[in-house]
Image (tube, rainbow, N blue to C red; front, side, top):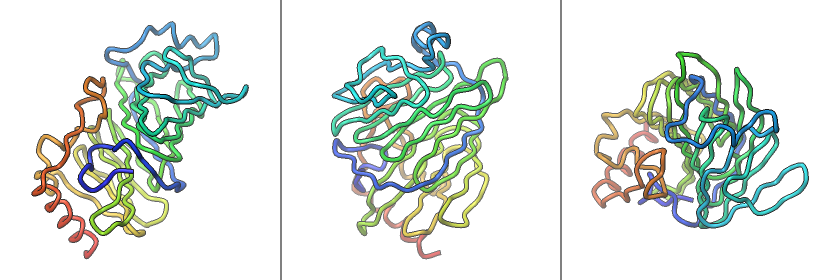
Amino acid sequence: MQNFTQINSVPARARTGLRSATVALLLPILLLIGGCDPSDSDESSGNIGIVTRIIGTAEIATADGREALAEGRGLMEGDVIYTGADSIVLLDFKAGRVEAELQPESEFQVKSIAADEDRFALPTGQLWMRVNSRDNATGQVVLESPTAVAAVRGTKFYTFHMRDHHGRDVYGTCHCEGDVHYSTVETDYESHHEQDHMVMTIDGKTFLMTPEELSFLGDTAHAHSMLENSPLGPNTIALEEEQMQALADLIDRKMAE
């Protein structure tokens, strides 16, 4: 679980609670930048994705049982990936349709991949995901994850869990790029907003933080990776004391509204 000093990162021990929700991402059909060999996710073999990199140890559960996950492993519908306390796994689906960085102590389910919809689930943990357009075609990516339903036209989002300065559980999504239609399961929040916004849910209350309100984050705003050279983007930057206080004050104001 993240602590309050690391809103853009996940420390080695990431303990997340489980809530039911769905993130529905209306996205262009994708092309991975710097991706793997498309033959590695050959549909004729049933593989629709591939593990491109592993830091630490991770496991995969398939119809045949549970075993250690290895780089280059093909992924099929129904597979479930579990990361360890110090583990990071990079994934590519269908030759570049989706790429993702799965962070420590996470569970990621591959539900289905199709021409018109890709469906995944993140029951626990943190995930940074990017999609890329190809030939102006459109498709839908659905991520079932804690607390929220977001319909995103764009390329990148980050879902996280942390504790705030009062010790409360915070479930959030940073919309790094693209337009977002966002609604929640446990509250009546529903809105459409553009990139660079962040949505948090605390104690059953959901609120939006705008780019103007988050300007104090500066270069840390979209630094979500736990790797030095992640294809998704920059490595996390811990917040300075003044930034932490500004974030605490902003959360308090939002909760009081």
